[in-house]
Length: 123
Length: 382
Image (cartoon, rainbow over all chains, first blue to last red; front, top):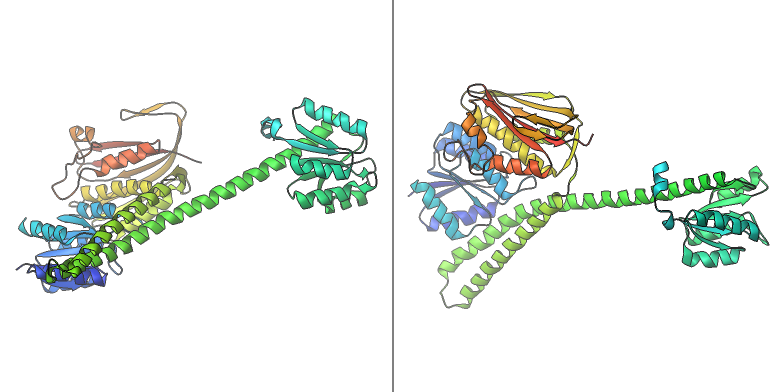
């Protein structure tokens, strides 16, 4: 089954996403920010990365850019609930410009994220 | 301050208190001819009584009002109407009386006998003061309001971010638990309710955000260079190493009026486009900011710009360039030359819309192999 890395500084998002995805049979690993995420990818490249945008240490857009440079073609879904500077849609448009496969706005429902994960993995 | 005298004199209320009836009547005539609103009394007691309903902005008070001193009346009036401007009229000018009158709150004095010219000049000065005080109060209120709105706007964004995370976790966990709970149980009903309220909360957050955005879209003076610096800071970490930036800023302090968040979006969009155009080859992005004055209507690249003073912002890349055919459609929604996954084709049409909303113009010029320049003209506040 596909291996998915979730990168989000919100512990509860990580845990709930892990439960949802594992229930559907995916193998899930978690990272609390971009730096930790890049570190984990360098050890084992996952089939899909789901990444938040507004994060401390190394934020999402920067991490996405590094990931796509180092691992061209790697599948990434960006997620965001917005921030102080831009709203969710604006952050996600920016992520899309930098080459992620798909984006999802928080809050999402289980059905939505599972469908998106399936679609991106099959693409 | 002649322009201030153009205000409608009907709104200018003067109280006259003098025990010399003939003199008072002649003052009343002078002011009524000039359409001032007038109330008068021949003694202090009636002066106070009348002014309770008349509420004059300016009072002309004789220094001697029978038993009562005009200076005492000034003090009394000031107690009831702190904003009233009092002028003491006196035939006996001594430093002492003037000092005393001023100490009691009089604004100025007139020496009897005075001519109409001096009288009107003094009154004009008083109403100029009233006008400026009112303006000050209005501006203070506006400033406070705009600070409040700004706070609401940025709070809304911060709250939305945190709440969206919280809601995602609540809803997702409830959905997971639902799998393990029998269909017709109370627990299942409770979980459905949790999911329902999460959806309600999501709508509320969207409403707060919309409200916040409306608040933010209150236009205010912006130093354009500050926004450019913000964009450069945000994108610094994601700039490929083979791209360098050259700043050609002539006017660091040039101001425009607008919505900072939306203008930020325009700069960000033009800048990320430039980065993408040079992604493979690398090169230099030139960012310029100047002031331009058009003394008459000016046509640039088929766009007619009305005369006026403009803050001119441009982003020039040394990338692959855009062909004439593509350039014609560049601001059309969903038009993109980028490969799938690299752009929605909406960015430039949104940027164009924002610039238009700010009474500005955005112009694209390009040469294949040499690069593209986007120039934004926004009416300058300077």
